[in-house]
Image (tube, rainbow, N blue to C red):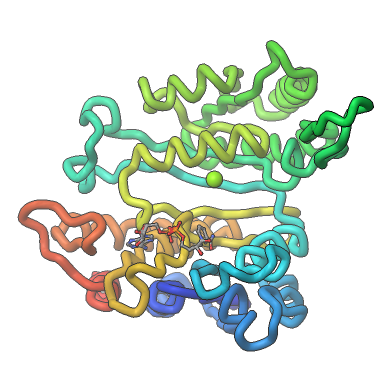
Length: 357
Ligand code: NAI
Ligand code: MG
């Protein structure tokens, strides 16, 4: 089967790391009887320089018409003085909105090869393999009313509203149950139902959904406890599903259990019939851009997520993940994950090592 993939290299280290992913995808394609038609488009600062806009209409159309979108990262100091609606990061919001991406999947998995490089206790992090499923387009970041208003006596009041409609909860819930089915069959739904009405509805809807997923073990946890449990005993979690605000915080917390930001992929999904967006968690790393220092693994694992969650090609995804482990087993490291006795490689050499594996 042949897939149309839109590539968005973006800014900073983006073009360097995405090239490694392209090479690897091309190399594994014949082994799994796959074909990829890559098309590269402008997004972020690169698009601003070329067209004046962070997400040109052409780019969005191409993304919408493809089978999946692989993004590297956008942003950099150069564009930081622009008004916010013209900044590179606007490309991300435009893609989420324009592609209807309401679910953000962020795995946090400890690779055994990197445990020693972590500052956390071995017995706590060994074997951790968590997936945070965060609702991405609703909740308090978007709920209305929002704004800074004046009270009757003129006192200024900042207002945001945490709202979720039942269908919004149901669709993110389904994504999470499906993800749990592909993993360890355990789902923890995180809310604050002891004080928030919106969380009570959340809990009711997720509980009702569980009836259609009898193979998944569902439990509920308050967000404050979840924050604590993630640090105390992260191994208890498989899939976590939660709203936009709680998910923003918990996904970063879970990510940091794993150490390097250069290792973390993500997926943003919408309607299962429509393309998803796959990108590393990290940014454009302007401090190391163009110096052949970037770790391409987060980008490569994002390509693996694209295969698994975007294209339904789990075998090819597994192959990419095994290649990464094999190279780490061989003691090959980029600077950000360097450890004693390992061999330090640049981005290109890491790409070659991955290809060889
Ligand atoms: P960052 O993630 O780009 O960098 C933070 C630190 O991690 C830096 O020291 C960087 O060198 C290092 N790092 C990041 N990725 C790495 C990799 N693959 N290999 C080795 N080291 C890596 O975050 P920062 O510095 O806050 O933001 C830089 C720019 O990226 C900003 O313009 C920001 O707005 C943008 N950004 C874009 C994101 C996206 O495209 N999704 C996400 C986060 C930030
Ligand atoms: Mg965040």
